[in-house]
Image (cartoon, rainbow, N blue to C red; front, side):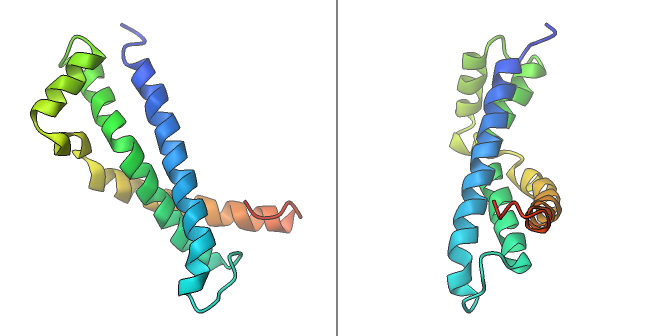
Length: 128
């Protein structure tokens, strides 16, 4: 019982990281075109890309988070039964809690990613 839902937790973490990296990288590369030619190394671009990273992370990991939470709470006997139970509510059931997650991740990413970028620049490591 100690490790109940740990496999769902690993999947959730991987999806969160993948969504964050894809959203951040894509927006950091594409945002300068829409910001009057601003450099991709501009701090404003980093903040905007951070919000895109939070959006990507939320979209990718909310379904796994819902499954993990319901399974760990003991509502269902197995992960497959948990998925089937959530599907009973319709596909939108997998995105219950999306907005709270997005609103929780956005400020964290808006601080951590631009600070990381500026520290890397300061130490001569280049941007992410």
